[in-house]
Length: 434
Ligand code: GLY
Ligand code: MN
Ligand code: MN
Image (cartoon, rainbow, N blue to C red):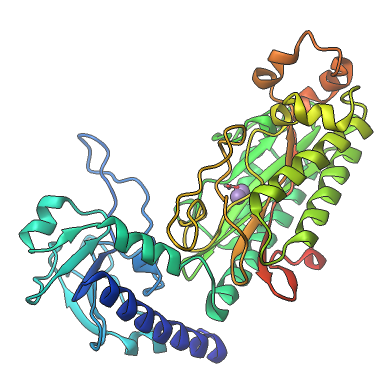
């Protein structure tokens, strides 16, 4: 049951969306757009499918991330028509619309078939996972770039409904983090931590916005570590958990690092150092600030941290200039967050100008100026990645003995989800609940 104030906020969200779509369609010269939710893909020569999440622009209207084979026709001055795929099928449970107020905003047509509905006369675009041939058979254009970019831009600033969903996704994800931490400290293996997370968030894995990263010891230093060990290692130095949650389509993306009972004494202070750096960077968030500048501020902070913790012997500035901080932190400070964990629009200015990341920071996904209403992740990290440190092997700027002491701890990352407002940052990850 959705709370009445959230239902009311969703109603305003849909009204605003209808107005914005009418404006954009008018400017781009379309009579309407057909959004496809998408469908799960089969493994080759098999009848089993991979997990599925609906297309972001479809989800912007319809808060059902698992709804496949459905279409939404949006036209100015018409109620949007939702072609809701609900085949009668005794193998599966028929999809059902929830008893929620948002459904009233749509003309709903239940259908058994999967091909798109036919379109009225006029100029239409079809957006989503569709071929040019399918669009052409409908007399429409498939995924025109200019229109897609305008709709991406519409998702960059979040309204009160979207922020409420992101806050709730965060609240639920944090419950998972707490349960996983307890499982780790009680001696659990990576899989036990993941199962504790899923249990506490009442989620199945395919509902997660991305596959949780649950790395004990050196696995925590593999940026997108993809396994869940079933055995607990003899020494438990640390757990790095990057875990999310989806609420009404909107994603949480939170990372925590916890020292284990066998951690080297230099590890916990490093975790505290990265946490303090992360809090300082969050405090700096405000409209008008360049996120690239903030990312560079992170590297300056990491340089200082590496010096303070005795991992490098040169100055903090030299650690940044020589690329040492990038070897310890090869990823970006963060990204836009919303209906996708890496929401679109992060590398293009509001007027459509592409904003490539600086050559030395190719992984940075957010290169634009911050604006009120953006929700961004803030996720500085400091990892021991032998492959990246190797090029400094002959350098006396690095204290290799200390680095070696940390090697079986993997790394540290602290990631929160923060709303940018004119009054200052609003951290949706709720530190006081940790
Ligand atoms: N969990 C993916 C990311 O942090 O970007
Ligand atoms: Mn993450
Ligand atoms: Mn992230």
